[in-house]
Image 1 (cartoon, rainbow, N blue to C red):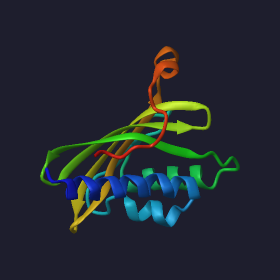
Image 2 (cartoon, rainbow, N blue to C red; image 1 turned 180 degrees about the vertical axis):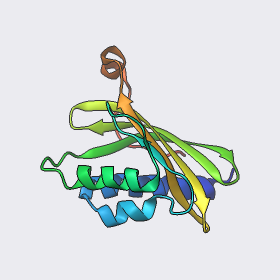
Image 3 (cartoon, rainbow, N blue to C red; image 1 turned 90 degrees about the vertical axis):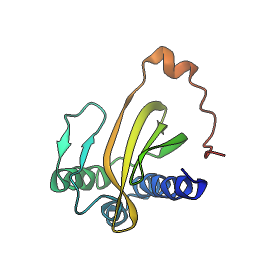
Image 4 (cartoon, helix red, strand yellow; image 1 turned 90 degrees about the horizontal axis):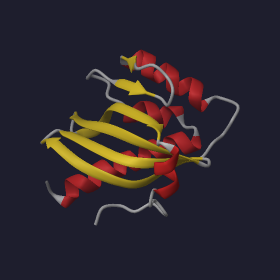
Length: 138
């Protein structure tokens, strides 16, 4: 796939983490698919299915009392088809490192999220994870 398509997906991926960090629910809502089925698995939580359930979860998280910064590190884009892209990355949530998967699909000519899943790494892996700083694909 072209670097431009990779860049488009990475820009949307970055927008997802910016919406989280700035606690911008409106921005978060625009990032998720409106027509396609969506799902989300937050760390330690059961899977959520459907836009209503997913957006309700983000509303709770973003309006919660604790503001935690979330940083995306080492995002890697893999195209599964012309209109489906997978981003695998690390997330730095405070002092914790998570592994995350974000799946984007083309909807109305725009890359939108259809799935997000994040979970903690085993402590011995996290301690040795080489994720010193955010770096986009070259």
